Image 1: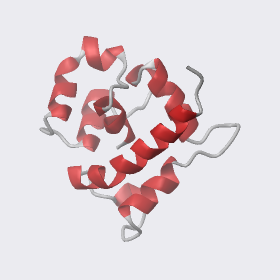
Image 2: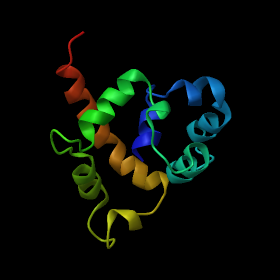
Image 3: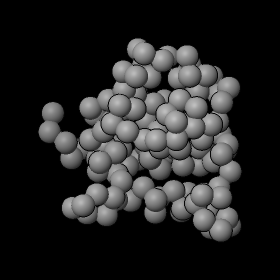
Length: 117
């Protein structure tokens, strides 16, 4: 869900914008779910090529790293609820995306406010 959000909010890397724009167009048109896009276009692997420089800096902040815990997985679980046995059992749907997207947007806005321009 995070990769889809990032790409739909202008943080896509050149691999998605220049080299392989068709899958990104399908994501924008919601012809594919966020998870299916990730499996098809990213081979199920999230790498620094997927995002722009700004996107990678935000991802590094939002995800856990060696220096500090991130809040993405906590936000994800809170946004989608606690009914599934784990976050890996949450439906790959645009409805799930719509529940999580505002939370990511808020975190991105908060993070941007702390960045030097």
